[in-house]
Length: 154
Image 1 (cartoon, rainbow, N blue to C red):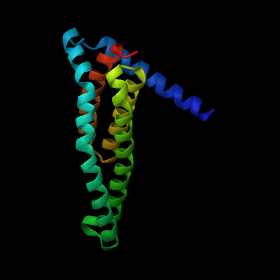
Image 2: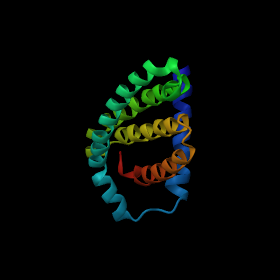
Image 3: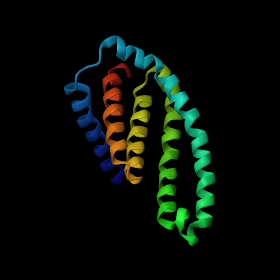
């Protein structure tokens, strides 16, 4: 029952975002949409390549900061907890993007949804880090582009 409610919430959110970003927002020109869809798999590959070293650095930095947490300062417990929550949210984004790559080449709706879910998680991660401005800008630009090109994926 809980999974069904979770799916209903995600489906309703997708419909609402599609209404505003896909239908009511000014449409991108068809040639621009086509270019975005063609380069999307490569952009995701580049994104994953750039995220992996960052993730490894976060794990290293997280281990160092956890060791200094009892002493306060830069490794204060609150900062360490926030950082580990961010890392835990960062990992699924990478996994979803890697899972999306083959489907983006073949233009499947499942791949589009993986990128969409990754965008949702990335926005939550920004909010957890209290980067509200970044979360808003990321949501506006990311959702606009995603829902403008959604019709290309079946």
